[in-house]
Amino acid sequence: MSVSLSNIGQVAVPVKNLERALAFYRDVLGVPFLFKAGDRLAFFDCNGVRLMLDIPDPEFDHPNSILYFKVGDIQAAHRELRAKSVRFRDEPQVIAEMPDHVLWMAFFYDTESNVMALMAEAPR
Image 1 (tube, rainbow, N blue to C red):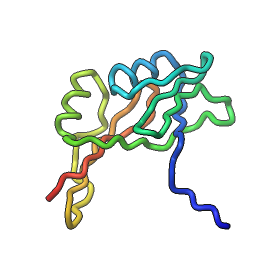
Image 2: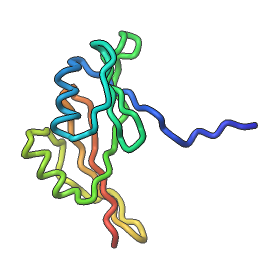
Image 3: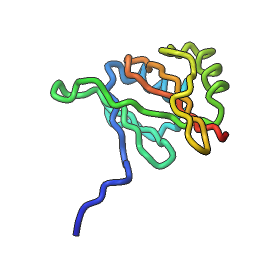
């Protein structure tokens, strides 16, 4: 038997201020909130993948991986989040032109200075 890893069950994002980060993900980004565990962890549902905000122990306190949030209309999502004072690194831009779609991305920061991204696959 060989192991094949293909499903992500949970993604951890390090934060410095749990309440501030919880409000950003829940109230600004609209990610469905699941529960808190103590004063160091908060959990969200990203369509079946659990997102964990974590005040990490020193050994785990380092930059995070980038979360790419799929959206249908990246221009509209960008406008809406900008109106909510989300800080973007850049405007939405074409990253790749595929045979059947165009891949768009726009990178932004959460309240803890973690880089996140919006991504959209627009049909040709």
